[in-house]
Amino acid sequence: MRASVVFLVLAAVGVGEAFYHAWSENAFTTNWFTVKFAPNASLFGVPYWICGVVWFPLVLVFGLWITRLGRETLPSRLLILLSVGNFFTGYLWYLDLVVVGSFTTAYAGLYVTNYALTGLVVFQNWKVRAMREFTAGTVIGMVIGVFFGGVGVAVIGLLGGLFGAIGGYTAEK
Image 1 (cartoon, one colour):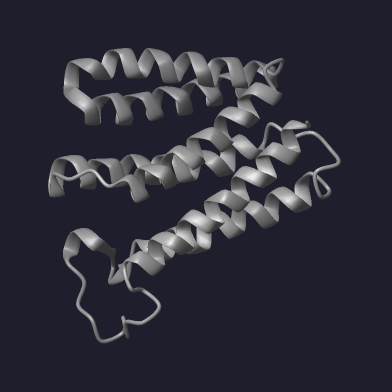
Image 2 (cartoon, rainbow, N blue to C red; image 1 turned 180 degrees about the vertical axis):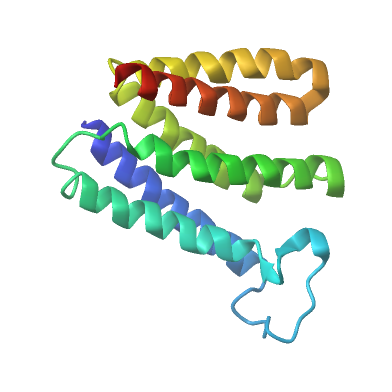
């Protein structure tokens, strides 16, 4: 099976997960314009469940377009889009584990789905130097992050991946 088809299936799974998560929080039956969300449950008054409901359909539609409905391979530039989601999930891991002090499988499922999409793009484009640098930067960042706890692993790992990818992209030019 083509990696692009697997990518599209995973993105569709993400759409389902996001809508399930929103439904489980009664998001569709609550008039959330009148509800004051806790500061750790929203960003500027917009609840976090909206991010998943917008993000995964966006990734699915963009994936359908950029792979021509799964007929072409995954381009390496998808890493840029997915890294935005990875950074946001890093912030959400921080909120879940450090600030709120809880672990929810619905949240973790969404995060892992985005990481799996990223991994698929890296795997498909392993010959591109930026992908190898992204992976090396992520692993090195995570190892360094161990000294700062779980949040350090996430944050420094993400930053390491970002700097590795930037270094890989600029080195090719």
